[in-house]
Length: 115
Image (cartoon, rainbow, N blue to C red; front, side, top):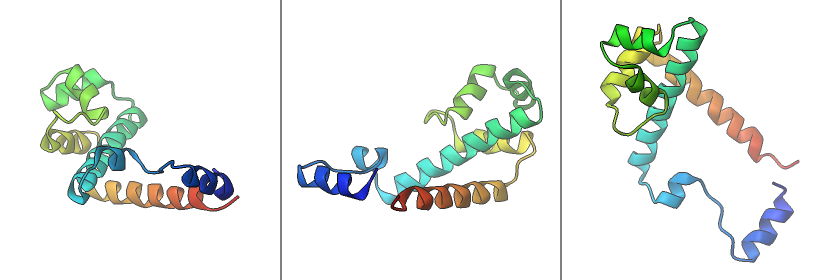
């Protein structure tokens, strides 16, 4: 969005933020959500890259396909323990999550640049 348009909307009473702002999440809750999203995205990325089905990953985890779908959807009712186990099962490492965070941060900075 152009800076001028944003200023005009803010002057008219509009507020800008993300889902975490809307939900009133604390900084700790935001970080937990970011972690859950990073793990879920990396699990799906690596699972697809390695040609593993959700059912195949579920078998490795001794879980169900629907649970793997919930892991990949970053569902709140899936433990981070199971999500991390899934990450490791598809060949991921904890350092993969840091790489994803840096990429998202760089992408976000590019989006904020005036056009």
